[in-house]
Amino acid sequence: MAHTSAAAVSRAAPDQDPEATPVEQADSIFYRLLATYLPKLKRRVLPYNRFGDNLYHRLLFLSKHRRLPGDEMLWNDVLYRLKTTDEILDPLRVFVSDKELVKLYIRATIGEQYNVPTLAVLRSADEVADFEFPSRCIIKPTHASAQYILRRQGEPIDLDRIRRWFGLNYYRAGREVNYKKLQPKVIVEPLVFDNADLSDYRFFCYRGEPRLIQVDMDRHTHHTRKILDTEWREQDFSILYPRSDRHLPRPDTLPEMLEVARALSAPFSFVRIDLYSDNRSVIAGEITNVSANAGGIFRPLSAEQKASKMVFG
Image (cartoon, rainbow, N blue to C red; front, top):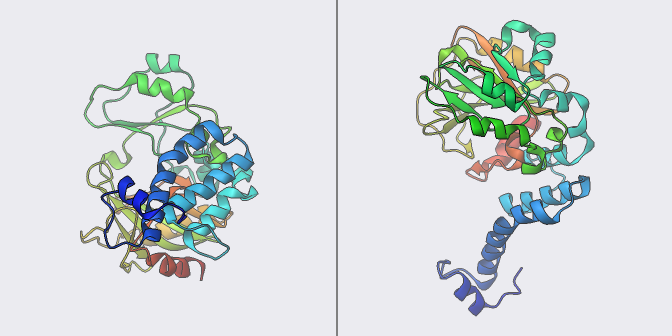
């Protein structure tokens, strides 16, 4: 990585730390170039097969973590191995990646009362044009992640965006192969507990046992997080988003949420179970196979060791 001359480094990146060594400056430029050109490599160069996918994931890991993945039982390394081996192709992992089908798994495992109600599943762009969306609802593609439209008070809806979802192959966006063959659909749901700003509880489970809890707050405004153990003891780190300074009371439904997470995670090695609660009832949201696509940056970075030990032992 240090083949670039110090003079060239200085010209290419005048905003570099003037006290950095030439090697450190060259490394910084390398990672900036990697982050810039990796999306183009993904779209135009790397083949859409397991070889191309895994090479992309290796480069993505290098870009995010500034190191190559290893064999250690570290948080992101475990997630990397999960998504680059045949485990991610397990039929059940693929099945629960679909936001409509996961409800069948939830119903069969813990009961229909834990599902978010479904108002409609739209299976074509024509159905979108004919459907009358409720004034309060959330609209999501069933075959993708982190895509949604939140309707709070009857605001206008971007119907063109919803129709474009039918042409979306989320596998091509992040090379997550569990999404590759999912049928494009759009699901419409009511706001859980009729609350547009509900905190959600994400349980990281290993071998069917909840180990850590991530609570996301103000996701649609000023996203922050807390990480807690299963005894509701707050940890001194966060992942990706800033650590919230808000006091977070222990929910009365924590024992029930732990039981739900335990049941839903039982068939999997490492998985994230996403739940909601209004302190009276518990609702299961989604099951996430590879959290943050193995790009969860810990704040501080050193906390990855601590979290890994808490989860994997």
